[in-house]
Amino acid sequence: MKQDMIVILDLGSHENTVVARAIRALGVYSEIYPHDITVEELKALPNVKGVIINGGPNNVIDGVAIDVNPEIYNAGVPVIAAGHDKALCEVKLAQFENDEEAIKVALKDFVFDVCKAEANWNMTNFVNDQIELVRRQVGDKKVLLALSGGVDSSVVAALLLKAIGDNLVCVHVNHGLMRKGESEDVVEVFRNQLNANLVYVDATERFLGKLAGVTDPEEKRKIIGSEFIRVFEEEARKLDGIDYLGQGTIYPDIVESGTKTAKMVKSHHNVGGLPEDLQFELVEPLKQLFKDEVRACGLELGLPYDMVYRQPFPGPGLGVRCLGEITRERLEAVRESDAILREEFKLAGLDKKVWQYFTVVPDFKSVGVRDNARSYEYPVIIRAVNTIDAMTATIEHIDWAILDKITARILSEVKNVNRVCYDMSPKPNATIEWE
Ligand code: XMP
Image 1: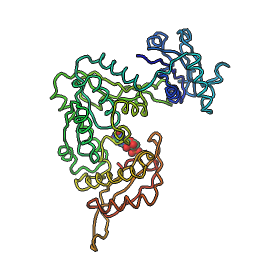
Image 2: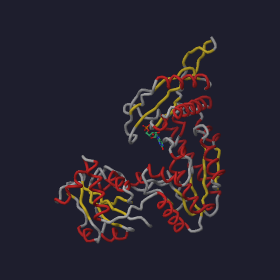
Image 3: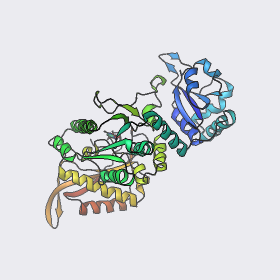
Image 4: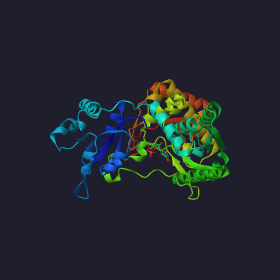
């Protein structure tokens, strides 16, 4: 590993990831560790140039104040305490909560003047380091990857492909609930352009069959989730000599910011319940990256902008936007109206502004007129929301002219639809998805 590192010890601060990101923004790599790391563990980390002890309101567990192991002050690297009032020398960094500029200056002084760290954290070095690490980890063995086409799995695929080429086997399961053109894009980019070893499974009929007649949202989700694992497992069993499983785990999956120090490190995702007897060792080259860094990594690896900057898409796909029983007719209406919405948002520049936007088709009809005759067709509901963490959300105030245009296109181009509505509900009381 070539890059220098500043270690942040979480002593109950809500701001650990903020500090880590601020240091990485200076071009210096930074990782967060629990407060009780031992001096041996600290010394075993590569290229540590300094330590920031980041205190905060959660530094009391079960009524007892926690502290770092005192011997880490003798680890041979500069140690500074921040965010709590232990000593005068900490005052500069104690301004963390309220003055962004002061934080930046203080961090910069510490990182470069005190720790003498070099600003050598960048995507080119990261990618090169990870390629080397993956090669060291897997040797000439094979890695299996479930390539959904989402940002994280796509970036992992591109990275592993660079590292091990044909020894990466990607499996893309099309559950028939993908957005328009999405599975085709995965095949085009990974198989045709990047020459990846890609197994494409069109399981549309199988999924729609399992979902026929099912109306309960939770049951739909369960069926889609378990069927997905079943299909993936069947494909995995057909392949010979796979020892590793690639995973798009990223840093927020591992670090839980803003919770009690004791809970800071979450257990890794296992593969959404893959059977016990499918045992693989994991390869997780993105597990130290924040989401925006994953995107930068994707661009560095040459993935298309639209793939790297696509909006979040739920695992059950359009299945949770085709309300109630999933029928082909309404699934088509969701898919086509969603494609129109995405196209128009892109034209209007809203795709770069709005966090998530999609259409929903409910399972009831209303009366309308078409060609001077009565029609009885479905409505399409447009949803466009902004959020920081998806826990709460506000709606986007879209210009009427844009909504008018989208409505006109949906009404003329999408079959079985005679009405378009805009969902005005924030989260709470609504959720972002309808099911
Ligand atoms: P809700 O509807 O809970 O959605 O407000 C919050 C965010 O999570 C996404 N979402 C999912 N993502 N698998 C996912 O990977 C899922 O099953 C799932 N359900 C909801 C949703 O799109 C929104 O961004």
